[in-house]
Image 1 (cartoon, one colour):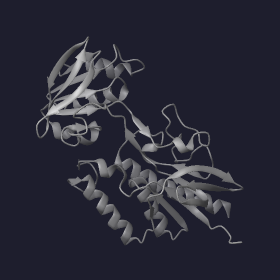
Image 2 (image 1 turned 90 degrees about the vertical axis):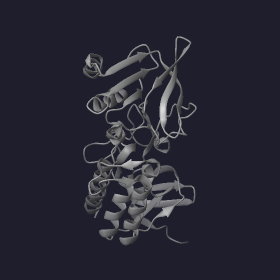
Image 3 (image 1 turned 180 degrees about the horizontal axis):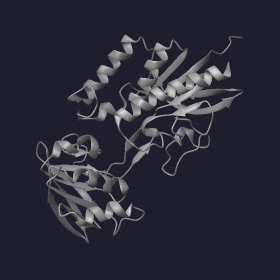
Image 4 (image 1 turned 120 degrees about the vertical axis):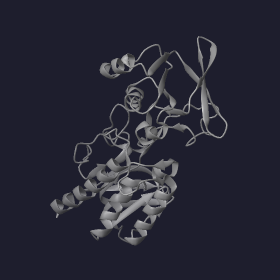
Length: 307
């Protein structure tokens, strides 16, 4: 009977967090496994990127290709087109059940990412990267001195408004609800007091309109259709972490992100989580990359303690 191979660590996810961990694993000459559906992660959905050190400006797709070349340079072996369906304990180790078979590993780094909640209205997908965005910090500077709309009813929307106040000419904050339940009061007070900000309650966004780029949004309020002329639409209604396969195995927070400490440790020793799927709740490439590095180094130290 063939003995099942036991990897030192398995990295799940091909975004910048997973790629960073894999590069470090390769350079440390570890016996690792790198599984992902596709290399690139959120880069494949990003427009221009201006806030990653080393690049004045680079498109998301080009950044993904740069990362792929760096993986090749470091001779990183990656298994693409694979999804992990379940993780479970097997003795002292971990068994990964995937779409192509089972793998055994001593440690695991989860970097499965997340994706934004969408409005699912006409024009949203058409104008994605052409005026519709899901990250004010990433794309806000592109709309300097323009009128924009932020859509959302929670802290993420208010934080987006706070970031855009010194950038945009005018900010319309559309909340489908009659108030901001459970939002930070200081953020709400700051938005209310600022003359640049107009809050529109009970506003249900129904469409994004434009020509080549976004020119406005349509919404309904008390049954009446309204039109706002804006150049940018920031959809801030939360994100969905790719953690369904971890339910019942790892501790998740109230938003279903993997609960981690400052060292990227999860509730199960030997398993680490990084990037957008983790409870750090800061969706920035540079943070995810840093976490990927930390997790690999911590996994290596964990393995040393096992020996």
